[in-house]
Amino acid sequence: MFQRVLVANRGEIALRIIRACRDLGVGVVAVYSTADRGAPWLHLADEAVCIGPGPAGESYLKVSRIIAAAEKTNVDALHPGYGFLSENAEFAEMCRECNIEFIGPPHDAMRKLGNKNEAKKLARIAKVPLVPGSEGLIATEDEALKIARQIGYPVLIKAAAGGGGRGMRVARNDHSLVTGFQSARQEAEAAFKDGSVFLEKYLEQPRHIEVQLLGDQHGNVIHLFERDCSLQRRHQKLVEESPAPNLPVKVRDEMCKAAVRLAKTAGYYSAGTCEFLVDRQNNFYFIEVNARVQVEHPVTELVTGIDIVREQIKIAAGEKLKIRQSDVVQRGWAMECRINAEDPGNNFQPSPGTITRWQPPGGPGVRLDTHACTGYRVPPNYDSLVAKLLVHQPTRPEAIAVMKRALAEFIVEGIKTTVPIHQKIFSTSAFVEGQVDTTFIERVFYGQGSAEPGK
Ligand code: ADP
Image 1 (cartoon, rainbow, N blue to C red):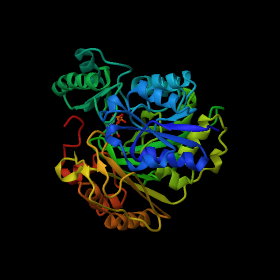
Image 2 (cartoon, rainbow, N blue to C red):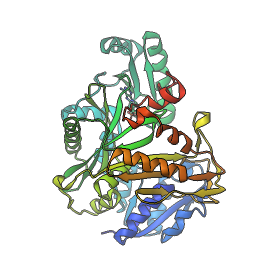
Image 3 (cartoon, rainbow, N blue to C red):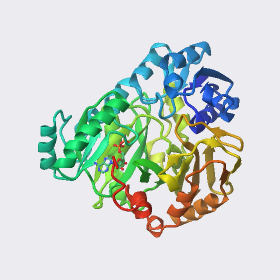
Image 4 (cartoon, rainbow, N blue to C red):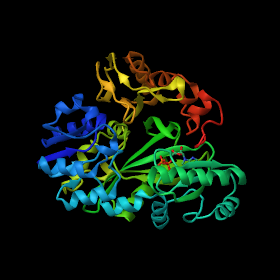
């Protein structure tokens, strides 16, 4: 096992990783930007190193500073968390070249899976169903028009390097295809320095269901079942749950097997997620792999009883997975609400600032992963997630009841949060019945149409 791990991240996930290190008896070093100086999670590490100014490009994304901090503090491994450098294969390789084990997948697999177009090629080899679309990248408008007419409108123009819902445009006719093609390329070029795009059939009101994977360096890969992450705003998740409501067991089992096949084909290890869209006939289609720990991983931890971050660290240290597939069972129902510093009444605009009052919920069945507290200042520089409120109960109706109780207890003053929209969601009959899809929030609360990417 490692002696000391550096956590190359901030906020709730940095705290989550610090806790996993403590549980394993591993030393832990935190890093911080000047915008996070004095932040509450830093005190829980053995040491904290400043890596630069607030803008992420000058600190949490600055490879040279992070490697320097790792060398200075003499760590033998680094956990990237999610976001920032977590899916940067060059960074992973550089860490390993410097004898700092990157707690994540092999960099070759990251490289292949990090590009959606390349990932689709692997999925084809692994016989994992794909959304109908172009065979590869699209270079010209004419090619886009030809393929769009073949697939049939509506189509989705997608950036190969895309992430966070960026570089995506829906086109319902030739005209919007031409404008969307240009704007998706520009957005992707600006955001990812790679403007390449491909086309997919745009599925109407699909569900987003993903499979959690764990693999070790000895060729063992298992799945930890699925999460439904259909409740999204602007293609970013807001509520996640496991199991997925109203999903036939046969479909779930096929999805899980397909995800394991893909991971094996890619030579994958560590934690990872295989994301699928599911249409109204319960056909499922692969969309992408997230080669890292995800925000919503605790949902699966609650249902399976497996500590995913701890497993990730053990796998990186070369240990064999002790959990067999047949050991993994779904017990009860877990749900997560992402509590963001955002104003749901104003198009989810970020709402940074000082939290003047923070009174979190608790009690039976509640888990709260958060780095916030009274007096904490949410900096404007980073992702707006301030807490993940989770519940675990024997059944879905009980989970909903406990979540409503927990949301009602949650008092946050000084910043706006997504608590009110969660209260609305958990009181909406369609949600209570499990009738969810990726357009639900925009359709039900904000009026049809605004759900489409690029709007
Ligand atoms: P990103 O990497 O930017 O998050 P994804 O490929 O994971 O992009 O897709 C994010 C979300 O966009 C999905 O959860 C879904 O809501 C929507 N989406 C993606 N592909 C399609 C598609 N072919 N049809 C309909 N919606 C889609």
